[in-house]
Length: 410
Ligand SMILES: Nc1nc2c(ncn2[C@@H]2O[C@H](COP(=O)(O)OP(=O)(O)O)[C@@H](O)[C@H]2O)c(=O)[nH]1
Ligand SMILES: [Mg+2]
Image (cartoon, rainbow, N blue to C red; front, side, top):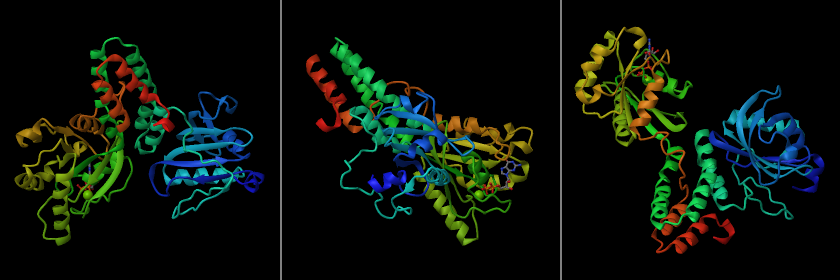
C-alpha cells in the first residue's frame, strides 16, 4: 500500500472476478480496516482481534450495519493493527460483495483496482513484497488454501480445511507405524480418497425431464430454492433448458430444467425437445417428472409410449397435493422405474428431501468416508503412491515426510 493510501486510512480491492461465483475475495489494508473489523466482523474463536496473528485463518460472520449476520466467511490475517492486511473470503453473491464494499468505503477505505474486472486488478507498488493469498509455510495448508476457491459449497470448504489436520495426523501415525504392510495399505486408501475432491468441486448435473406441464420448472425452482425457471400452466413454456446451480446436503448440484419431451408441431419447441435428448445423454443423473393427477393421464401415457427406454435415477410423481395416493400410478410404470418413484409436491415443497437423498445415493455421494483422511492434490496422491511402493520402512518414511515439506523446497 502506498503512503498516500495509508494516510487516507487504507484501501481495499476485490481480488476475484466480478459476477456470481462460489467465493469472492476482498483484500483490506490500512488503519481504517480496524473500524471495519469492529463493526462488520464477528469471530467465535478467538473472539477478539488482539488474539489474532498473521498467518491465522478464521471463520467469521459478516455483519450488516445493524449487526445482523449476512454471511459465514473465512478470514485470513496477513497483518494486524496498526497497518492491517486482511483477506475476506465471502460467498460470491454479487449483492453480498457490493454490500461489503459499501461498508468498507463507509469505514474510510478507498477502493483500488478496476470495478469491472476487465484487466488484472492488482496494483503493485514498488516497495511492496509480493504476497500470496494465504500466508502459510505449511505445505498441506497451502495446498488446501489454493484449492479452497474451487470448493462450491460451505460443506466442501469445511471438509477441505479439516483434511489438513486429518492428513497431518495420519502421516504422523504412519511415521510411527512399524509395519510396512499396514502403512502401504493406508497410503493407498488415503490416495484413493482423492475422488472426494470431485464431490465438492464438480457439480452433479441432474436433468429434470418429462412431459410438458408436469411441474419440472416448479420443481427446479423448489430444489434450487429460488425462482429462475419460468413456470406456466401453458404446456411448452420452457423452450430450451435452464441450468440452476444449487446444492443437495452440501454437495454441489446443477439442476437442468428442460423443455417438455413431447411431439410438437411447434418447430422451436421440437428443437428444445431434441436438445433435451442430448442433455439426457450427457447428464450424471436423470429425473423423470410426471404429473400424478388423473388430469394428466393422456400426456403421461403419450410420454411413456415414447420414452420408457430412459433409465432415470428417480421418477418424481408430482402434484401429490392434488391426489390421495400415487401408489396406483407407480405400479403402472415401466418395471425399472417402479422402485425409483418419489412422491413430491413441488408447489408445497413436500418430498424434496427424499428426492435429494435418493439422487445422492444414486450418484454414490454419501457421508461415509468424509471423516477419513483423504489426499486432495495430485502431488499428495503421487507421494502416497510412491510411499506405498517404497521397498522398506525408512524409504517409506522419507517419502511421507515429503508430504509435509514447505512449498518452496518442492
Ligand atoms: N398443485 C400443484 N401444481 C403444480 C405442482 N407443480 C407444478 N404445478 C403447476 O403445474 C403447472 C406447470 O408447471 P411447470 O413447472 O411450468 O411445468 P413444466 O412444463 O413441466 O415445467 C403450473 O401451473 C404449476 O404451478 C404441484 O406440485 N402441485
Ligand atoms: Mg417448464
